[in-house]
Figure 1 (cartoon, helix red, strand yellow):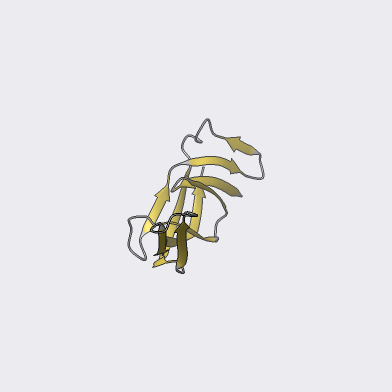
Figure 2 (figure 1 turned 90 degrees about the vertical axis):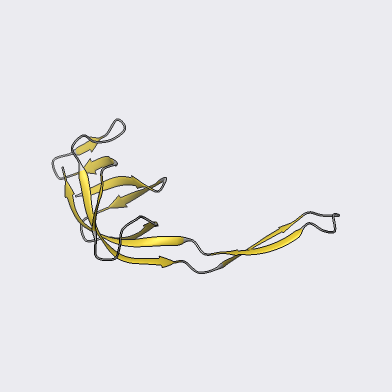
Length: 104
């Protein structure tokens, strides 16, 4: 059994027991969260496709970690223009969650 959920503007294919990294959600470590935007549910009996979401389907997960990804360097540069050089860094925040169950 698996499902496709939408969170943080992205779609993820999940199964019970999977651990995924998603965009940061507002929950503390150890909290149980629900993802109501389930776009597809596949079981042994068949596939249910939502229009746009599957009615009554919910994916339950537990937050394992809140963190920041590795630092990336962003460098902006415009050719033949002296003052337009800019170096910045960025660390994207994430939540690591473990999928507990898919309720359909």
